[in-house]
Image (tube, rainbow, N blue to C red):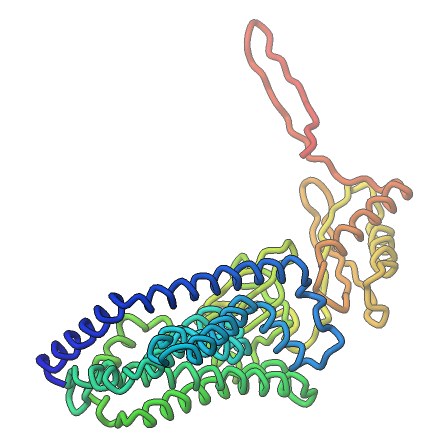
Length: 436
């Protein structure tokens, strides 16, 4: 379509609109539509105030209940369409059909919007719903007024040629619509496959996450390929962009790409998996999720650390549950030289053995490690079945050990500091015991 054709089309449309506006039947139809809109708005307000949408049609089958709730929520559109259709029928039989043309257009537009609302109600993403609804309604409106073909020709007349690819607004619109539909179907399919994989007890958590990621990525590539092929885009025509994409990955997307590859490596070698208790730097917690770019480590205080996958590959990671959840707990303490070291070791072993979470099959052990300046130093070790709450277990054992020392008269050493003060005629020497 040339520029002169577009100008002639706009002039013709302007003359038709001017002739329609100057007709008295236009104002009659416009008034009837305003009255129908007011009644529809009042009806919608009355329905919303009297109908509880959470309990409406609860006993109905799920598809029928969903249809009924969407219809009730769109009561204003339905009432408007019914009233305008009634007015159109009345004017059609009482005067010339052309004098109720606007009523027919308004009724068709309202009915088209109602159908679009019912169809898009199955989509959960609010942005996608608005985008699809608006696009579908614009297409329906152009078709109703008979301007769909001229609009398609106008969108296809403007083009940009990149290499062997001819880009037009019509091509981009078709590609966007197909991509949205393909990605929506891909999301539904991948969610179904994910639920089936998560229900499998034969697969480890890391293998489950790896399979889910590979399936999602494969379905995404397949959806994009199918959508581009459906609109006639030859993928070989995009080869001109491969160099730019490579440079972008090498410079701007280097970290993202490294984290993605690191995530695949972590899932393949099973060094960490969801549910493991890990320590990475100063962060300790259980892995709650493994994403494409990062892992989520949930701490016990409500915080959640998002750690890039690359850090787990390049840095030191302590996995408390890699091969065995059994954890060795070590408690270091000291006594003065008046205590019997054999009695101290026996008391410590008895206290650790009586701990609630201590493993009974692995007896505790207590050894004398050092004759220090302030007293004797001991190391008590015992096993627990799970590293969760290890600090609480240590605290309980140390409190019980303190009670046992009090009961047996074993003293914990206090450091002694000697302070000398010189001044005046006579020197003064004072010894003070200071507790750390």
